[in-house]
Length: 370
Image 1 (cartoon, rainbow, N blue to C red):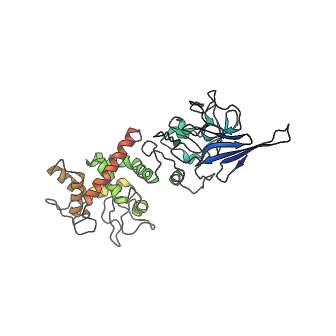
Image 2 (cartoon, helix red, strand yellow):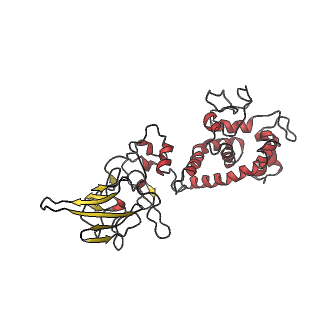
């Protein structure tokens, strides 16, 4: 067999021991798809099913790749789901071998335990094919399941057949970096394209929903509003102060200050982002934004307003007040007061982010992730 630099087989040379001649078959691919084979007997064009398997009229393979009866029976050619069938039921899948009769790989996932998703028990099986769901997923490289496209024209797959991979993985590479690099998503229904930015946003909500929900029960503030507030202020947890200070709502810290007077704030470590208060968690950061009382703030009828007291007052006066009105009121009271560069439109920005937060929360709930 001859392979190109991407591991794509381009030619087969067969030299039977009972003869002095060899036969050569060249394979023609385009964008990872087998178009046909050229040998001394001429050209043969190949049609494929939606997984990239050579296909006749109707299907020729059962979902896990077992031969129905009209698939090519002789091993040594392109087989199920772009795999190369070395022997009956034994398929070369680039990173490892797959047994189509047993419906499982013969060796564990080469990505190691880091590719297992703690909240998805199916991924704990290191030998499973396509997340245990061969109808909606396939595994072109023997490394990770990816969604099968089934749109107009029955697109074959929704991800690259042979994504660039290095095994064993870099031991310093985080699970998130590995997933981003290889198109893996822990939320296939909520992030079907495997977008790294969408994955990060979903992970933010998945990781922090429980804490925000606990605070919502305690404070009476809508959980999606709290998540939207933190998501807008911290860029869905991507800001330096969120990562270094556990500060998700941008509570400021005056020069030389220790906690800035914020409830639950802690002394900042040496590598913290300067100018921002430090906390132990997102819960503590949001708690401080809600419950810290401020003598420098100004709100009608309140001598030392807090974020929560302002929210409660606005909703008491107008129970149907929008999230935009509520958080603009918090900003105007002193959280981001008039005259500061970010005061104008503050509530509107929180409102816009809340739409995406609500959509993601609804999807994660529907899929049982929350």
